[in-house]
Length: 392
Image (cartoon, rainbow, N blue to C red; front, side, top):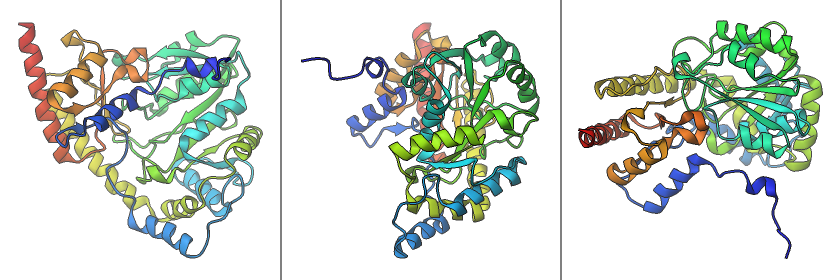
């Protein structure tokens, strides 16, 4: 029989995040602490859940339009105008998707021809590179540096651009590093982007989770709105991961083509989730503020815990991850994470799950209770002490 599967998909590696999640599941050990999955430990706030329940009680269980409910698209536009000062036309420049992940996928499919180059700064979210490969584009990796707090510099971007470059993916606030791009950083790369006539896919799913300054979208800078697809969603800020709802805003021409793909592959995002999301945008600011304050408390605890262990780590100002350096122990990230899970029963994700430049680092999520984090850090300290003793 002929080979039944695509060579392209066979060549794509499975997610490194899921590898350790699956190991924990198979262990079936109540003693295991998993710090590997980027999912809020908060339940979706009640007033948002109530709106979803009410929509079902009212029989609102039919398809919506392909781009999503009009009221939801209007609220998305209101939110972006209020928080970022960006004005979008809800009828032409917004599409509601099945999570931010679908928006990334159909955005690249709508923008790229085979052979176009997509610049991907890494470490970064695991789906960018596979989505580029699936459309026949060529991923061009920029290895972000710890000494730059994993920010993208204008010099790095300039060096990566060729005459085939079409899209820059901008993954900030960053998963897995917690790194951010401030206005000055964005202004510097804006010049390079405009000068070289490239487009930006800005993944801003963690926009509400910043701990230093308010997030700045590159789409809000002069000359960038017309060349940026802004991606966001409800999973992280509103603790709505299972509702599977995201959105993309951008130039009408790009959104039109994204809608065409969405129309054939998905039809529309879940109706119940859309009604719940309207409530989240209208009345969810206080919930976001409370969750952000709790994440910040956990972030500060982890920073202090690693400092006491004399583990090198830069301070993350976005998302809910910390990215400690484990190079001193002479193991790969995968070896460290594997031993840590086997010997201390704590699951973390090797930095290499997010690109080769993540070697020597570990991603630890603090989307978990402080109690669990405290116990995990006790075990981490014990593990580190043991490893240092082995080296003597």
